[in-house]
Length: 96
Image 1 (cartoon, rainbow, N blue to C red):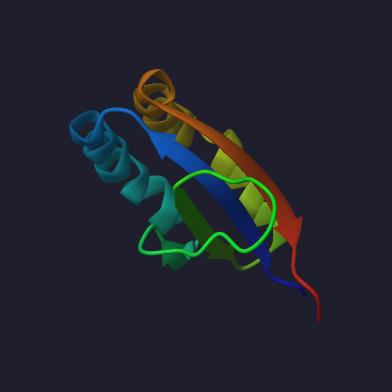
Image 2 (tube, one colour):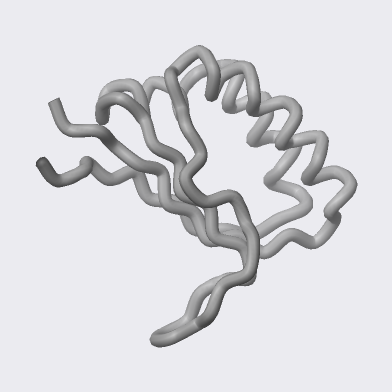
């Protein structure tokens, strides 16, 4: 079974409140087997347009990736993030 990934590009407007989002998303990520591959950090823009923060999260399956996103616990965490950030998020199935 192929793994799946959340790939997000984010602009954070309030780092302190964004930290509360990060704390709140820990439980649903743990529940659905998420593993951070990229969590911010320095990046070099080589082509196109993007946002200053890139996050890549690995899940054991596409089903787990969608279930995490749609879970009540993640949606509660997301409600903390939405007012203080702008982002783009895709859920993509990995290649075997």
